[in-house]
Amino acid sequence: MKWKSLITSLSTVLMMTSLPAYANPITTIWRITSLSQYDYASGKYETPSVPTNFDLIVTFPLEVTRAVDYGTTTITYFGEIGATKFVSPLTNYVGTDPFGSGLTNQIAYTFPNVSDYASTFLEEFAAQSNAYSPSGEKSWAYHIELRVRRYTESRGGTGAADYAFTGPMLTKFLEDVMTNPLDYSFIFNESWQVYDGAANEYLAGKSWSSYNQNVRLVGLSIPEPTVVTLLGIGLVWLSLMRHSRSVSK
Image (cartoon, rainbow, N blue to C red; front, side, top):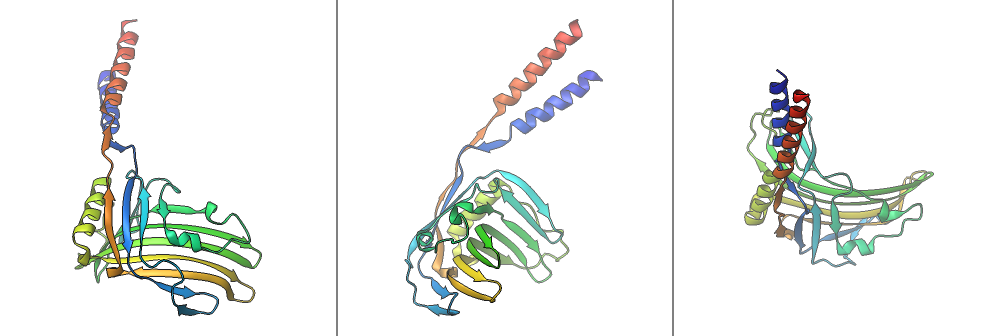
């Protein structure tokens, strides 16, 4: 029985250590060809004062850190908080944070999700980053997000059809986004604001948005998986040697 238990546990170790790992993050390049600009202080849209044609770079790990099933929606998180990185030229136009550390205090993550609704079936790639600095009744906030959605016919809306992404599933999804962009809807937004809660008004801030045909995935760099099977074999060999020595004593 001891040998059976040992072999079972070692087989589990070998299986787990043989899973693909990725030494580098995946890199995606999104081309923005037009955008709108909203001014928070005036509450009006205005002519953009920033670049309107540029490439946005989003990098993130391909390792799944956790998946949460909320019933009709399952969200999969890739990498730890902060491992997702955005490179946007619009960030240079973000207003100074008068209350804190500003953009150095970002919380960024990638969270593709699937929803099994009664009206539709939604599959979405999503990544975002946020920063927030409160000071009494006033606050400074920053937000950037990229979302790509595929809507298809409902699969019942019971929550039985939604699923968690894996690394290979997500790369296949993104490859299809690049090949068949008309099958998807796109959302890009980057914004900052200074808000006075006591006066219930925005003191400053801009919001830049781009949608659908003005957003395209034009670059996709997928890292090669590194299979650490040798580590698993080494652990199995070491454990067997220790067990054989203990039995011989």
